[in-house]
Image (cartoon, rainbow, N blue to C red; front, side):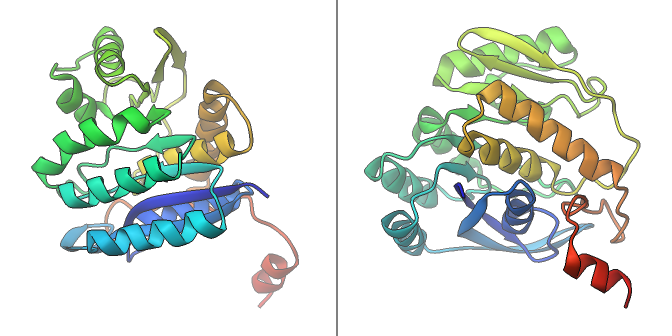
Length: 270
């Protein structure tokens, strides 16, 4: 079984962050591991508190993982302080990590800020060059590219700017009112569109975490970047179509929509 590591923050309500990553990786048939960068007090309506993990302890988590169960791919999510960014970079370089998918998380689905402004710049300097792929949404891509994105031409221009500035492939997610969930992959100087129909489901808490984790899972299994993106989009579409509806705000996806078996049937009968 392939192994995938998520380096991210914890979401106590289970819809995003580490919890969403582990659910997604398990559903995509890889062995999930985690290094937690922050604890958050949040639910589907918002974030009320963030406690960063000490950088040295983040390093300790990573060392224990790399020295025992070396990951075939890595997903990086919420990294909320410059010191934690530097700790992660040190370990990734030290162990010559591969297949890194970085989701530059800046704001939660609920609109709450998750990352210190000072961490964004150092993340670009330290972690982007190590990544195989980064997965910004429209607001994040506007920050990273320095341009306003109003249409698909702007998406292509922004993705090219980010690619040329940092040397990593870019999956620019178009779900923020630009189009019908069409995403743009910019890799090796070429643009590739992935077309998708917008699903009428208000419950999108953790979609970014889920997508990047699914991509990392498929890279670990040996698929190309393009194949991994398509397979991840298929997974997240099905998870949205399952129409899970829990929580008072923007609820989570049903990450386990395709899990069946003896124990599931037994539970259904209780």
